[in-house]
Image 1 (cartoon, rainbow, N blue to C red):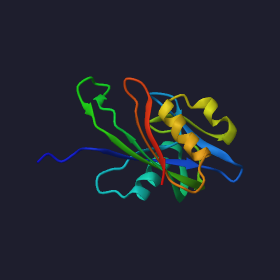
Image 2: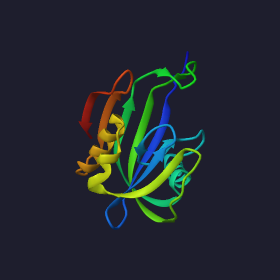
Image 3: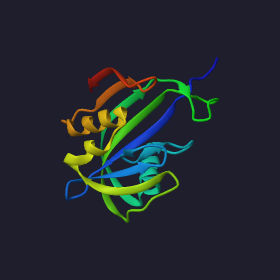
Length: 160
């Protein structure tokens, strides 16, 4: 039997005491909130803490889960050969507890942005949808399923 392959990723909506949101600009695209793939043998909390620190230089405390998302698109990676499998992403609300803004191999900029201006910077439809879920968060975890290729399409949304 073939075991299914999924990428597991985490995202951190990091909000400062001043109500600003941490954003990073990826080298391959636009502005996003920090996060990324959880490595083999790594738990979700450690993966999120590592990814935020690597991409932005900021240390975080993780508070609560905002949403769970499935990107059921399968498509070719940038190399045109490698298949990118279905992704499961989990977003968490976080607060900064230290560190200093920096960049990484994956990010060209990092900055704090007023909550009301975040959607002016984020252009990727899936990231915009996930950030809007954070803005609309009422204590219930969001679940959404979508595809990003050939174009973004929201297939399912549900509060849990």
